[in-house]
Amino acid sequence: MGEFVRLQKYIARCGTASRRAAEKMIAEGRIKVNGTVVTEPGVKVEIGADKVYADNELIKIIKKKYYIMLNKPVGYISSVHDRFGRPTVTDLVKKDISANVVPVGRLDFDTSGLILLSNDGDFTYRVTHPKFKTDKTYIAELKGGITVSGLNALRRGVRIEDYKTSPAEVEIIDSRPGFTTVKITIHEGKNRQVRKMFETVGSSVHTLSRISIGGVHLGHLAEGKWRYLTGHEINMLMHS
Image (cartoon, rainbow, N blue to C red; front, side, top):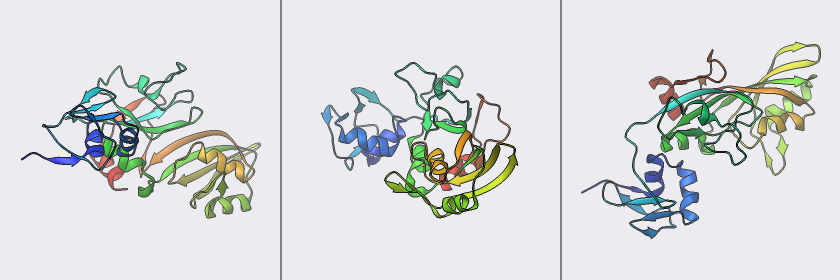
């Protein structure tokens, strides 16, 4: 008897999407099992026996998995394709990696630093799902300064639009005329969240760079370059 897994987990193991994104694909009617559209994520499929199609393309479980760290420059999109033709993070690795790796989470167009790429949907799910509260640390260069009350507000959590952020770890690490450099650690990842957090307390971000995720640090990796994660780093991210 073969191995049975939930449909969204099968899709993730194929590297097609994270489990969360797979559930959305299923709900949208984009997944077929043996030629029949399935819209319930709890359905189980048998590995090696059932045929699963995503957007009418047969998908199979990946045997070789890739885990990559990239130092993203400003001006790159955190996606596989961009409808406006802008460069993407996958452009920086595809000449060396033939596998279909995708960004694990995202970094804004105007933010640089550490981003992960992988073809392992379970890894993507574990690193990005909010319930795991994976720490992400950034260095923000602010125009001007930041008040003590502003720092304390960030440490308590601030309201942005329709949500309140979780308490952040924040410290000033440098100050010079016209600019203040701050290190901030959060474990959420909403759109432009760090910039909005500083705006909420009256500070303006000049540059922003992510330096670590889940205890894995960018280190001295040059901008635009990438390397494979070590086994220890993968384990850290899976259990952070």
